[in-house]
Structures are given as structure tokens and as C-alpha cells.
Image (tube, rainbow, N blue to C red; front, side, top):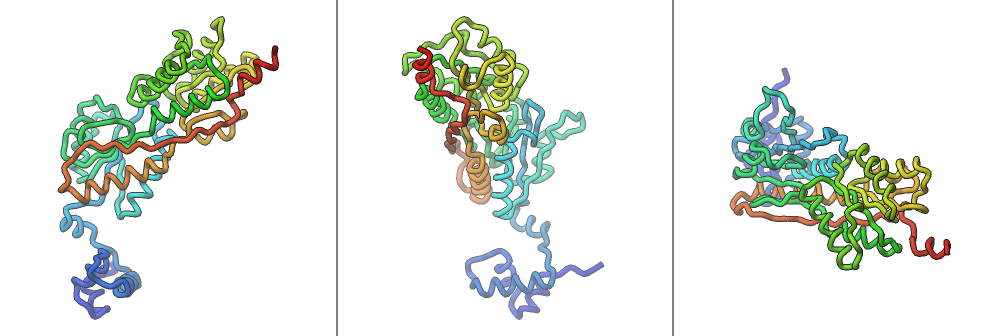
Length: 347
């Protein structure tokens, strides 16, 4: 077996002290850039591999971040919204010298609790991308002193990276309203912080613009539940006074709803307009392209990674609640028509 190269070997080759080599490898400011480059170049030529365990024991950090992803649809990493955030998060933490490891969120009877996994893996911090915050084992992590960053969930003493649910929804409805729509139906997601923000935006907008919120225009549909979306779309189209536009909880539900509309012999957007949410890649392939909110998942992942590492590396700061709001953007698509113009043409 080839003998491993030590800092002492590099120091001897560079004719410097071991401490100087250590400073160069750890990018310390009290050594010149040229000297750092020289030492690192020689270390690379010697095939030096850092002693990970030794550096871990010395710094008391493993540079390992735990990631918890446990969402109800069972799609996991196939859930595009979460996958985009996670990819951006991964790139961010790796650029800062960290790695990430998924917590086991299976239903296996042999699985350790989340907190037990955190202790066993010696995670420096936890990124909760999606989880049931009512579970005792999730609460155990949140009640600990471990640095935690979550997505779209306001919690005491932790960082919340939040899409601007209220503001984005207001912008989306304003887009629909500006195109002449007044009979606006809303199929919203199940009760959650995300849903409450969007529903509040819908209700307040309708009230401010003196538009009636009809009971037969508002329904609940689990996120990404295409079957339920189709059923509710048919229900909306069966009422005597049909809406001119339907808002859906997400893009998948919107696509399913649009297919149901077209199967019923109606046209989108000429007969009824359709609006999604999330800005998934599939919206660019569906025709007509669905109007939606494109959430800035790249910024969300970057913010999550940097905020978590800052809390890890500066433990002297007391844990406090912090919310970072990230704005999305309306993508007009082709699924919302200018309703007033069509009404005038039919007269």
C-alpha cells in the first residue's frame, strides 16, 4: 500500500514549517497568496490527501450537513420544486467545503430517529427541505441547539427560507384581473403555511376589488393531485354561472385541469383561462403554455446554504428566528385570454 503523504513531508519539500503548510492548506490570511499557491501546488503533485478525521477532531466540525426530505406525495427527489432548491443548496455548501447527507425518512422499524441520526452522523447543521413539523422526532430537532434552516415554515429561533406566497399570489391574480377577469375560481392546496399565505392573498384581493368570493368557486385539492384536480375542474364547469378563469394549486394540477377542460369540448384560453403555480419545466412543453408563478428556487437554495453555514461557523450568535423572503415572477404563458376583448367581440 502506498504510504500517505503528511504535512511534515510537504513542509520538508517546501522548506517551510509544518504550521506554514497548515496555514496554506486552510487558506489562512497570515500567509501570502504566492506562498499558498506554491505549497498547494507541491501538495497536489505529492498526491496529498487531507486527514479528514484529524481535522474534524481538531475543529469540532464534521463539515457534514444533514438534509431532511419527507413529503406526502412520495415523489422525493422527483418533486421538481424541492429538487431545484436542493441542487442549488448542494452547489452552495460544497463550494464552502461542506458535504450533505440525507436523513433516513423511511418507515423502516429499524430506522433511528432523526435526532439519533444527527448525533450518530455528527451533523453540523440540518436543512429541512420538507417534513411534517407536528411529528415528535421533527420537534426534537427544532427544540435542540443544532443550527437548522427550513423552507416555507416560520419557526422560533431558526431560519426560514420562504417563497413570497402572499406577494406572488397577489401579482398572479393582478395579472388575471388586468386581463378583464372578474369571475375567478381558486382550487387551493391543503392547509399549510404555504396555502394560508396564498389563500389570504386571494381573499384580500377579491375583497379590495369588490369581487364576490362564491362558495362554488373555491375548493381544496392536495398539491400535485391530478385526479382531484380533474374532478374539481368538472365541478366548476358544471355550475350555472361558470368562472372565466381557474387558479390551480400547482402546475401539475393546472395541466390536468386543462386536459379535462379540453376533453369537455372547451378551449383554453378562449372559453376559460387556466393558471398554475411553481414554474415547473413541464409548462414550457404544454400548449397553450400555462401562466404561472416561477419561484426562484436557485436563490432559495443559495440563501439556505449560506445561512446554515453562517450559523454553524458563528455559534456565538444566539439562535433566533429569521425569515428570508424570496420573490417569484409571473410567467404570462398563453393560457389566460383578455376577457373584456372577447366579450366585446361577441356583442
